Length: 194
Image 1 (cartoon, rainbow, N blue to C red):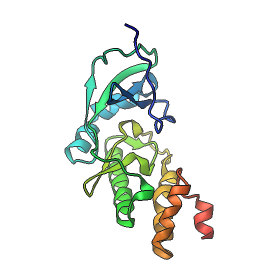
Image 2: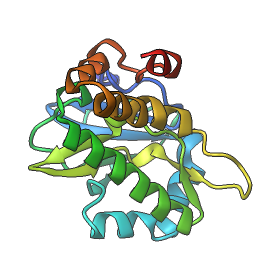
Image 3: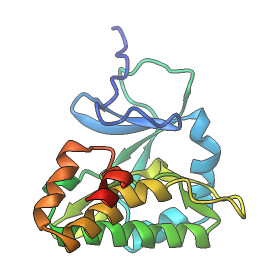
Image 4: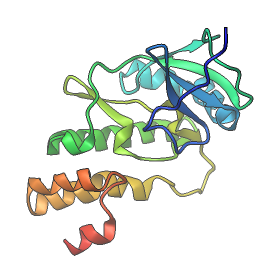
């Protein structure tokens, strides 16, 4: 029997630390060797347990072997995250939901810093909702923090959260529709002009 090659999920393509994929109808996340050190610190620091315990991050289970999956020399580990019952997108959210997702991102960032880690990005797409409660879904968004380094995700946080929320609060909630056009976040120069 031939082994299947992993097919990355369409929305999981930028992070060299790993990616999400579907295999035989199940969702998995491959952690590449490039993300090994950060992932190990994420677990060993207690940050994972903190976030899951506070229901701020979807839990996962480590998978020893995925039957029928071809070997990959970049692979360090495979995890299976708990599924979120319904996927939604930032451009579908209300003002309050976008604000709640922004607050969650900042809370996760503060907890990460307290454990010697930092969010390497701040995409609104790292958040989903279970009912009306936001939850962080990207296990590989965490990296080891080096004292004095700026937050790499700050600009993205501004584009995905601050700019759209400010624009909507100063003009019209309809401006949140811009997030449908700008999937990488509302460009700050455009938000400033508007």
